Amino acid sequence: MRRRDVLAGLGSAGVVAGAGAIAVYGLPSTERLLNEESADEPDEPLEIETIDAPGSEAGTIEVPTIGQVTFVDLFGTWCAPCIEQMPALATANERIGEDVLFCSVTNESVGENGSITEAELVEWWDEHDGDWMVGHDPAAELTARYLEGGFPTAVAIDASGRVQWADSGVKSADELVSGIEQALEADAGDE
Image 1 (cartoon, rainbow, N blue to C red):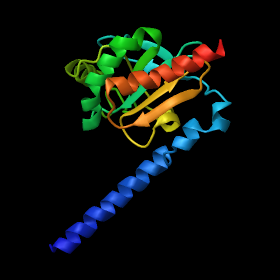
Image 2: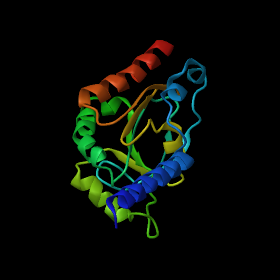
Image 3: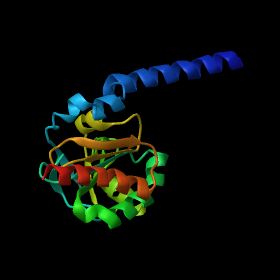
């Protein structure tokens, strides 16, 4: 096979994969998350199933949790930057996690017929020192609402349900805490 044919095939595969991602998640938009019009309308809570894992227990949470600042980390177990993000998340959780609902959520299908089993998710969580609430969003509703261009994405939502800070990519603990503090400050300003 000629090199040109291989490159054309790879390029086509990339276009199809990208189009599939856009079809599932839509085009990312920081403006949608942070524009003034949407800031007037709080997000309706979505129920997220949580996993029994270190720092987490089986059940459900609402994201956002109205009446409490909510921090969400959108991640995938297959995502190398998400693994790289884990130590900063642990540090941010230690520094400010008691003040907020601090959770990480994957949109992977978890279960016997899913992309990973619950046991594999728990093993991944433990291996990467997760010690806070972890949940899954198999219908990708939360992901569609908050994904900020790629994984990982971090989102800080004030107690009224309005996004105050969102960004994608690997962040330092200081950056994560600063984003969460924006939501805490907005909440304090509403009192």
